[in-house]
Image (cartoon, rainbow, N blue to C red; front, top):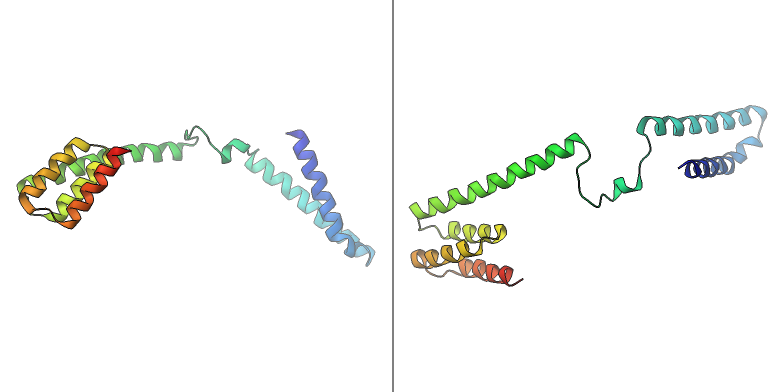
Length: 153
């Protein structure tokens, strides 16, 4: 890490010298300005490094997908709660369709929900019930074909 910082500082200094070179040739006051700009830039860079700390390359490519901050951990927990809520909503939808089976859009939604959740047997049963109550609509057939395609993967 020290080698990287040293190289970064050298490159920064070379860049500043190259950019500020025209100012140095004008007058002594201008060269003081150039040195001041270079100094402020370096102090700012060190200050940001001290404030933010070293950033590891693995921070950009977190291969194990483990949350590293409390906020990220909370987001993962919220997502888990979200999955439970989705399963509850699908169960509620199935119960509503049992009570009121004449809802073609509801059956299509139920089939697609079961497909996403990977509950293929329940989706087959829902398709059978749907065709019994509302017939085979194009939307229902399309949802069932999507289910069969997902199952075959």
